[in-house]
Amino acid sequence: MTSSTHSTSPPGLQRTPQSDWRLILRVVPYARQHRRDLLTVFSLLIPLSVAGALQPILVGQAISAIRNESQIYDVVAWFFNGLQRFPLPGLVARMLEDMASVLQRLTLPETINLLTVLLLVTVVVRFGLQAAQGFLVQKVGQEITADIRNDLFAHVLSLAVRFFDRTPVGQLITRLTSDVEALGDVFSTGAVGIVSDLFSILMIVVFMFLQQWQLALMLLLLLLPISGLIIFFQHHYRRENYKAREELSALNSNLQENIMGIGIVQLFRRESYNADLFRQINRRYVTAIDRTIFFDSAVSATLEWIAFIAVAGVLWVGGGQVVGEALTLGTLSTFILYSQRLFFPLQQLAEKFTAIQAGFTAVERINDLLNQPIEIRDPEQPQILPVHSDQRPLGEVQFMDVSFAYKEEDWVLKDLDFCIQPGEKVAIVGPTGAGKSSIIRLLCRLYEVSKGQILLDGVDVRDLTQAELRRHIGVILQDGFLFAGDVKSNISLGEEYSLEAVKSAAEQMNVAQFIEALPEGYETVLRERGTNLSGGQKQLLAFARAAIRNPRILVLDEATASLDVGTEAIIQGALDRLLVGRTAIIIAHRLSTIRNVDRIIVLSRGRLVESGSHDQLMALDGVYASLYRLQLLGQQM
Image (cartoon, rainbow, N blue to C red):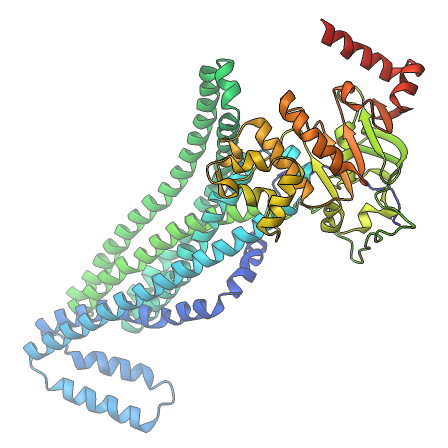
C-alpha cells in the first residue's frame, strides 16, 4: 500500500515564453522521423540555386554578344579560371579548354541560339525541381502535422479531469486544429522555404562577386540594414500573433458554449445578448489580427522600397562604369537582374518568416498544452487485485482518512473514514454540495486524493493501473453520454465484445426489446450525443454498457432519474439481478428509492455525519431524518 499525502495544483493553459531555439528543438524529433524525405528536399537546393543564379549571366551574355562586348566563351573561361583554384583532374581541364575553343568560333546567331537553349534548360530544370521539392515539402509537412496532432490528442486524453474543469473546450479545439495547422505550415512552406531562399541568396552573392565585386559589395551592404529591420518587425509580429491566437481561442470557446447551450439560449431569449457578446469578442480578434497585418505589411513594403533602391544604385554606379568603359552593358544587365533576384528571395524569406513566427506562436501554445502535467499516472510497478475465491469475497471499498480539495485548502471532503463490505449495498446521501459525487470521482481515480488512502480489496487505488481499476468498477451516471456510432459500439465502447455478448447484456438488463425496435437494431447509427434517442433510452444503453463488463463494484449516480415510471419498473428487476453478489454504491437524491439498502452514509459539508439503516437514521432524528421529511413534505404538496 502506498501512503497518503499528495498535494496538487490546478493546471491551466498559461503562456510559458521560450526562446525560438527551444521551440525548434521541441519539433525536431518529428522532423527526424521523416529525415529521408527532408534530405531529398535539401539535396535539390544546390541545382535549384545554381540554375537560378546562372540565368542572369546568360541574359547578360546575350546582350554582350549583340553589342560585340564579349562572347559566350568568356563565361566558360571565367568559370574555368574560377575552377583552376581547385585541383581538377586533367581530363576535366582539357574538356573545359576544348569547350572554350569551340565556343570562341561561334557566330553571333549561333551564340544567341545556344544561350537561348541554355536559358531554356535552366528554366526547365528549375521548374521541374521546384515541383518535385514542393510536393515533397507539402507531403512531409502534412505527415508531421498529423504526428503532432496525434501526440497532442493522446496527451489531452491523458490529462486529469481537473484540467478540463478549468479549460474551455474551445481553447483545446483551437490548439488541436488551427494551431497544429499553423505549425504544419512551418514545415510545408516555412522552414524548408527559408533554407531554400537563404541558399539562393548565397549562390547569387557568390556569382555576383565572381562577376564584379564592387557592385556585389554594394548590394550586399544593402542586405544588412534590411535584415535588421525585418527581424525588428518579425519580433513585433510574433507578439501580436500570440495575442490574436488567444482571442481566436476565446472566440471558439464562446461559439462552442453557445452551440452546446442553444436550448437554454433560446428558452431564455438570450439570442441578442449572446450575439452582442460574440460581436465584442470578434471585434477584439479582428483588432488583434489587424496589428499582425500591419507588421506583416510593413516588411513587404520596406522590401519593395529597398528593391527599387538597389536597382537604382546598380544603374547609378554601374552606368558610370559603363560610360567609363570599365564595365560592359551585359554585365550591368546581369547585375540589374541580380538586384531583383537578390531581394525577391529576401521578400519570400520575410513572408516565410511570418509563417515561421506564426508557427512559433503555435509551438508555444501547443507546448503549453504538452507541458500540462499528467497528474494521474499508472504506477511503475502496478499491483493486481486479488482473484475471487470462496474464502475471500471481493468488492471491499475502504476510505481511510480521505480529504480532498479542488482548490488548495478549500476542502470538499474532510477526514472521511468508512468501509463498504463486499456485496454490501450502500447509499450516499446529503445536501447539495456535500461531496457525494466527489467520492465517486476519487474512487474511480478521476482525481487524486489530497490526503489519505482509498483501498479496493486491500490495494491502494494508486497502486493499480487505471485500466485495471476501472475494469472492476461500473459507473452509471444520471446523464448517459453516447458517441456518434451504432448501438453495438456504444455498448462495447471499443472493447472486443461479440454481438452475442452485447445482446446477452441487453437482455440481462431488459433493454433488448427497445434496441430491437430501433430501425436497424444493434446496427442503428446514433447521432452525436445520441440526439435521435430519448433521455430514458440513452440511460437504458448505459445500463447495458455496465452489465457487459461484469464489474466487481457498481456505482449508480441517480441512475434511474431519467427513466419514466414504466421504464424504471421494467429495469428495476434487471438491476436487482445485476446487483446480486456485487458491491453497490448508490448516490441518491430521492431518498424514497434507497430505503432497502444495507446502509446509508450521510454527508454534510464534506464530512461523514451519520451512518446506518433507514430506520436507524430516522430514529436518530438527525440530518437524514430532516432531509427525508422535507422530501416527503415536498411530494405531498
